[in-house]
Image: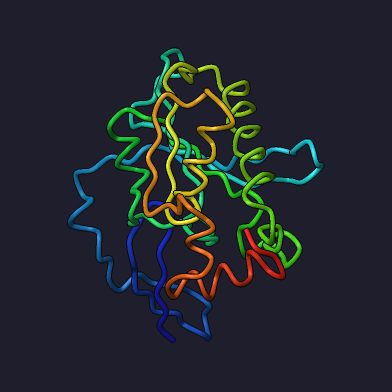
Length: 212
């Protein structure tokens, strides 16, 4: 049997599985040559319990040669659309690259993300981002409190699509972010509601039975 997969710190790898011996062998590693001289930083899971009592899952990336006695700037990243920020090496936001540039990267999976159950993902409906923003702010503050190596004066946030909307919305709710990057964010929900493929499909669900 053969199968392939990837992880938080490697690109696709092809494996052969001996079904009798139940042993696995790597047959091909697409990133082996590219990464042979590259040192990646450590990654760790980090979850918190929100004020509403929910466990909000997340993880963080540390720079190579990490020194816990130093203060590091922080990037907070959340989903694009409503898809959880995946555990992959390569993406539109390469967290290991940011960590290699001296940032700590905190990934948070707030309310509205899919793959955490129907009730959790359905919190987007007629919510306009309120609970999601509260969880991102709460998670960022708790993360900084739990990790003394974060420079609280240098925190940035970023997301795409719904995450881009969330980036803009967050700036109206808190001043903890010194920098913010909105990628393909929706800035006018009333216009978005009735226009284009996503306006008719996604917004028909997110704005179910209501007019924004």
